[in-house]
Amino acid sequence: MSSRAPASIVDVAIVGGGLAGGLIALALANKRPELRVRLFEQGATLGGNHRWSWFETDLDDPAKVLLAPFRKAAWDGYMVGFPGYDRALETPYRSMASHDFDRALRRELPAGVVQAGIEVVSLAQDHVLLADQTRVPARAVVDCRAATPSRHLAGGWQVFMGRHLRTTHPHGIELPFIMDATVDQIGGFRFVYVLPLSANDIFVEDTYYQDSPKLDRDALSSRLDAYCAAQGWDYGIVGHETGVLPVVTGGDFGAFRAEQSAHGGVVLAGARGGFAHPLTSYTLPYAAGLAGRIADNADLPGDQLAALIDREAREHWRDTKFYRLLGRMLFQAARPEQRVRVFERFYKLPPPLIERFYAGKSTLRDKARILIGKPPVPVSRAIPALLSAGRPMQGKTR
Image (cartoon, rainbow, N blue to C red):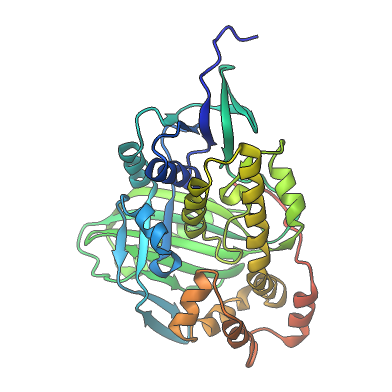
């Protein structure tokens, strides 16, 4: 038994200081500053080592207000490139690095909210237990830790390696190239993602939509070297990141949610709660929206707040069915090196349709427009894919 005295009760205990947890803490500080909130993060900094990007049209006005304190790169458009064409689009694009996320939260949150370098070993609806056996009672507990790999989901994987480079001379790139798919298609749909962060700073990432979660660091590193050499960049490496994200195409969502929490009455948020775009794996717009709704309902007892967010998660699963269907087309109907044709066809569509697609708000007319016409995959493979529940996901994320 621990000899420590129990900690005083808090109103909301948030476990996991990544994107979802940090935004929930900020929304509570903005809307309910009188509440006692604690944000527990095992690592030394909030947000880990990540870069989040989004279209400005992904966010509603409250989400834009919530994100206002964060330093971010901003552009008034972006580029895509495919073997058959390049295209410039005028949708505003934004990007934020995790170190800027950490700095802003430490500045904006009241003293004592951020509990970094603190490991939570277990949690329940009325408390969290720390590694030193301190028990922190809480009226509501929000679990924002990373999702655990699940046998209940089907789909494929988005695998990537990114580098922040500093060039010795101005690189001359003005707009983000969010999808340069003119590169060799290897093992699935491959594209390079390029963000001009300043005149001499650039972020470049090699990304793959592939059937397995394997991340071959040596191969991706050498391909990034070759891509940068082809651009003529002379540079030093400032930072880097790698990632393996699930691209969910089906599964038993109820079983997944049950698997993610050992105890009822705990609020599941972020990717652990299933709040992501199934096809793009975007999480920021959903994290910002959910943070506001949790703050708006922060007076609810923990079990009632958990039930409310559970209903919202299930509605999100139903509302994003169309994108999981497209994911099955991508992973099961299109042969790996031909998956580029799916995106090449998509990016010829009208910009407002593309904006609604990324925001997860495609209309019935949008869906029909995406599906009609000559399909970019063989019909003989498309029909079985549409009728399938999806390919079971094997392996684990990093």
